[in-house]
Length: 342
Image 1 (cartoon, rainbow, N blue to C red):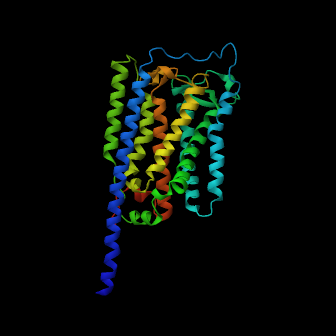
Image 2 (cartoon, rainbow, N blue to C red):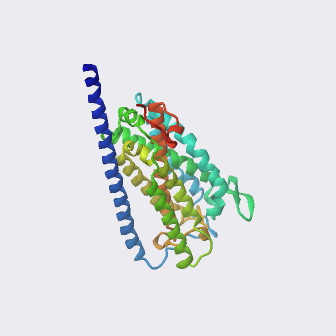
Image 3 (cartoon, rainbow, N blue to C red):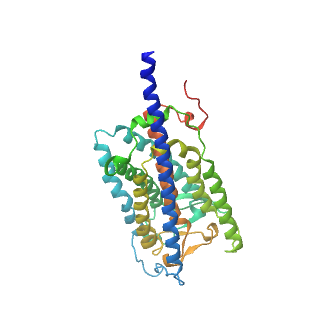
């Protein structure tokens, strides 16, 4: 009887702690979404006041940025080298190193493959002199395969995935470590029923895609579907739908917010200041919704959303892998119904 009483107390404490983690994480997510929407509305009101689009720099008659795209990849490469060295040398972050490694192995090949299959459909690269002019094969419906994707594109995606994960890990484990979940929290939640699809995210994604398609047809008077927006929705909504309820209590939300803010900063420097004005890349407008940001050289509204989608994808994948490593569970147990041991 005495042994039974001793076993009951930690169980009740564990259940209470789990409930607290869930409640706090829901509040953090709601606040983050509110802030994103607020900043988005404020930015839209400010940028919409500009009625004349800023012209792009002429790169046809004189090269304004020799190898500019190549050199600009340092915006991801150098932070990755610094943060990667910090993570590699840290004596206590063995699991985190493995989680980042597996995360890169999971995401990078998929993004590179999608760039090969969809890059020419969504993008064009008008300023060839801004690259090393080393091109990879890419496919486009109606025209087949062609060597038109610069090698810098793959550096962009590989560096972006690594930068997001390494920045999040650094914020979570160092600067904002007081907000991180412990391994005990992961083991505690790992013993519960993890199969919990996030249905509201799926319904929201479907509604957003429908609204974007309606705008493209009825307001922008453009044929086709908003393919790039659909791709961004799929890459963010799918992991949220499958895994958010699983890892939401484990995500360091202040670290996530800082990571996203740093991504926005890099985006403004890379996309708005360099990439679009100097022709490093541009967009196939028929694949866009039809909302363009005039002060930013008619940048499609989808592009700022890329960083939001990429942040969600990478952080969720990293936390899922870390949960699996700590609890020694299989990925199958996270996506299929599971009964807790009784």
